[in-house]
Image 1 (cartoon, rainbow, N blue to C red):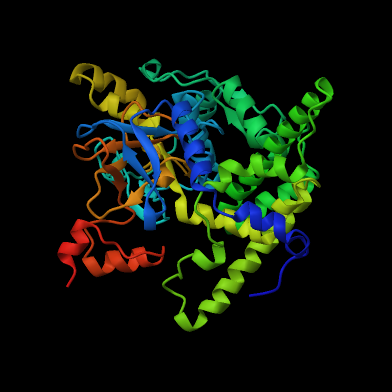
Image 2: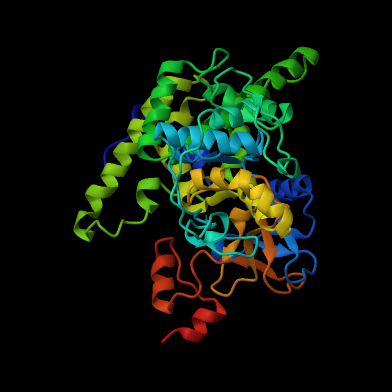
Amino acid sequence: MEGLSPIDSHYPDVISALLAPPSSLQAQEYFDELISKRQNPGIKVKQNGEFGKGVCAETEFKEGELILKDQMLVGAQHSSNKMDCLVCSFCFRFIGSIELQIGRKLYLQELGVSENHNECDMEDVSSDGEDYSYEENGEDSGACSSSNFRKKVELPKGVVESLMNGNLKLPYSDKFPLPPIVPCIGGCGEAHYCSKLCAQADWESYHSLLCTGEKSESVSKEALVEFIQHANETNDIFILAAKAISYTILRYRKLKATCLEEGRKNKNVSGCTVPAALSEAWKPISMGHKRRWWDCIALPIDVESSDEDAFRLQIRSLASTSLELLKAAIFDNDCEPLFSLEIYGHIIGMFELNNLDLVVASPVEDYFLYIDDLPSSKKKETEEFTRPILEALGDDYSVCCQGTAFFPLQSCMNHSCCPNAKAFKRDADRDGQATILALKPICKGEEITISYVDEELPFEERQALLADYGFRCRCPKCLAEEP
């Protein structure tokens, strides 16, 4: 690989300290506090020997019982999915109205920019980065879109506009109320929210630095636009990395301001140092398992093993380009070490290894299913109005909100090919939080495990997939099936 970047060379000790795994005591204190805030007293994160962290049951769980609802540390909707789904940029709840969701999608279809996905890919990425099946409302991956292929038809002139501006009300849409749209504090017109609370939380956590509006606190809005465009064209994992860095910078600024204020009030209290404040601001990110992105990313099937070094060098170069664009957009002098390629590579690697797919079911599908389930007398009359709209939408009449996110507690869960828990969105789960349910009865003290891969795959295929993430599975199923 290439040599160190200037920032890497200038801050080797600070960077090494930031990337050093937290001590067992630091990790335990952090996760105990997080579990308390999440109000999930039934679990505990514990050090798990050779497997690092693990999540254990502090109480008994029945089959199907909720184990954990985990708020993401950082998350992002896929850029292409924004054309199909208008959601809160912080909690990812659908917003506006059924009419607006439908009208907006039809309008973008007319412009030829809607992605028109035929189904939602209900897969999650595990705590070590591998895909495993994510079910929604008891259905498989086709659950959030129609399985019947429909040929799109055109609506009369003015219908789409009337849906979008609220002049046209669909029958029974009041059964599916959505939160009103709250605009971005910075005026970017790109981020939208379900409440002022979400708008404020996003602004204070990440968006004030990543907003392209008039009130943006970025160094250069032009550079920020270029960074976002590069991420959308290459890999939107860079958006997550930018959020992680912004999150740390904003936490650092709050800590620094608090230290200065305490120093002014009490002359005997010395202000905190920059490295100490930066380390504290970085703490939530420090808890995630990390490796450099270009070292841990799985080799694509179309890349020969003889070309692996060239491939990984190309990935490193891609990250370096992204980092330079981000540095020009949101650089902070005190937080300069965060803009080292080593830090950036490890942040992206953390997401590569730990991310969970962000999936929120669309209320538009619920609406049309409700119409389909009406008594025959009401259904016939209603469908005279709704069927042309459904046919105009086509087969992809409902697309889920899709993205990717890092969940601090869920990411601590270890793998088993015979897991006792899984990610599973229930009917009531309408935002981006990770929801983990028990697959079978779990005893107090038992480790809670999920599957990083499709556990129905043959033994050798499972082991090959898991080998990309640094371990050989020794779960009871693998021990029983091992040749």
